[in-house]
Length: 164
Image (cartoon, rainbow, N blue to C red; front, side, top):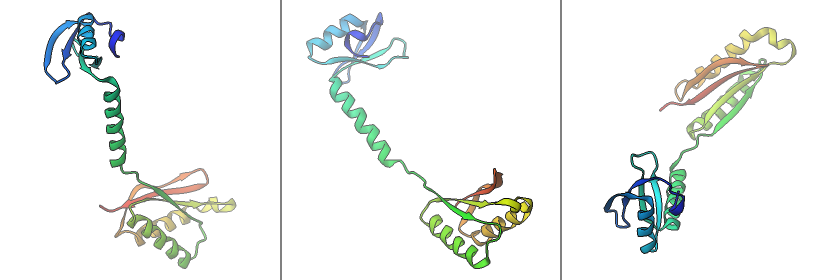
């Protein structure tokens, strides 16, 4: 809230230099801000009494957007890569997929290993679990299981992430 929008009876006012001007009515604070060619901005609406500051509102909004942008820059996004397997995968194909997963993990991404069952393969979920277990055993030195193997529809899914 800025200027005339502030309807509180009393507000604590902070001057443009950061010094406390004390508690006064919102109208009185607004007139002080107007005299200084600045805006009265409510900084802490939940405080008793609410805290208002006499500042340049446009500059204040700009600073807030800069801080938000800076915080977004420092944020680290973790990518999730998916590797798909089937219950009748051969050992060499499995090794290729393991190497692919190892590369993803070394780059800092999480890996979703999905083993897709088709048709009658649904009757052999134990085979799928063995394949996922052997997949993890080959990656044990570089990976940790985030979520263990679990059925989701026709797929068995396991999440891996790099060891710290």
